[in-house]
Image 1 (spheres, rainbow, N blue to C red):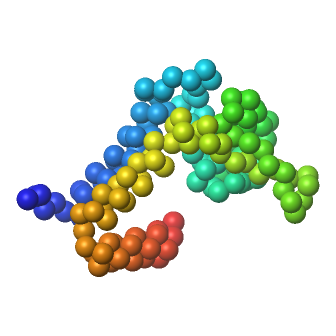
Image 2: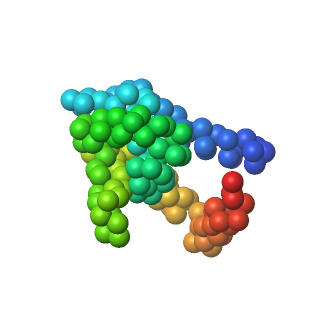
Length: 147
């Protein structure tokens, strides 16, 4: 039987495991590609992914980069094939940033790990427990993490 730990410890350990997966990729551990990303570039792509197809200005604003610095970083990511610029259908002068499949396959450990963990959860717990867990995660996501 698994030893009961405080909720804070369990949550911290889960969060830490996801972060460590990202960090190992950010430092190019076990990655063999012709155009690797620097650790800062990995963080930039993760920000783009988390923001959900931001405009160049939204990305620069979030990262607090100057426009030239943001443009330089984006150009590097585009040239390496990890980000695409997609022209807005609403305002043709504006471009959105989109993470490529190359990034997700090469550096996206977390995005491939989540379905494995979810599958293990469904195998380990009853459908009712999984449903309650989903409900709890939704409440945490929508109501408790407003920051």
